[in-house]
Image (tube, rainbow, N blue to C red; front, side, top):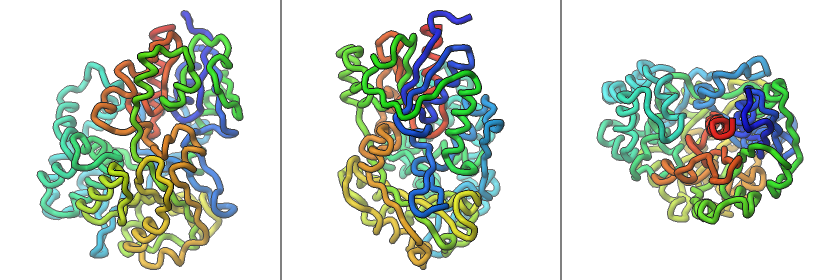
Length: 473
């Protein structure tokens, strides 16, 4: 039986907004989603941005936390068109000697390529991989909660709090294991010399060996469309092309959940926020941005290390020291001359992404927040370094800097794709200690700026909706 909440409004239709809407609709709350764009998805959308027939994921594309998400796993998304595609290997990292180190499915397959560091990698990863379902539930839950698996979480935390460079040097002797871990840790968009920069590296490394780094057939839009279709099947309503500039436009909703940045919440909530909470939103810090390039290709990227063709995701960055230097630069307001580049080549595994015989790929590197320069040359030079002849394969390219990304999705402040800087303080108080609650009755924040943070997993929206149900249901 419903309590105080009979009607809810969701602002924003990214994976978190849609997950919040589904969570409410499943228990009978009449829920309406308002989306400023003409299509749902937020940063999980697909479009032809280079040439006709070449479908590119404009934002997110690879989903290790999506396939493992406790929220998504409960939903019948396959009935609404979702198809996960798992490449032969989770991730590849080419080296200058012409070989590549691989993050494989399973610890034993991964350590086969790590030489002298095989025992150390096994000791670090094996217990966490074996406990991945339980570990995933812990790390994708609220920041403050009573752990159900304290020993497993404690083991994770023991290593997660270390700087990634320190962990790499402490545990591994050779470069192969070090670069494999450093590349995973660089997804934190945090200097690898800082405390807790190992956390994301562990999560992604463990996820790759436990469930892989999958893509979605048809592109990111297929995931968003499946979430939206399931929500509508529950009786929910989605209104696209409606930009909410003031929460008063939403009428008498019992609860409003906002899949927006703290900056946008300040703009649309107005005086409904208390001065104290508004001040916290003003102080919320955004991290480095990204510069992204999409390519239409005549053929697959000609990696010198052919093993790279087994993975949809390729980390391009050389040694651990090179990666660390590249990831520190944006925090100083600089762009590395040789940036760490994250490459995705989905058409190798999904024929819907390009015309027959052709391919798509994209890459991005981290740059200072709001940076207005171009990193096309630096990105392509890094790819060419490990794939000679790459530029000859490019039929067309489409570049998006930090400003263009923010214009495309207002949540990407200054090109920040993580929903806010991954500082130690904002890992705990995200965006404040109250997490989803804003201090205003019936008003909640449910974007990636809340726990558990960035990544496409829907848990920010799901947990915010659960909190709203506790308060008002």
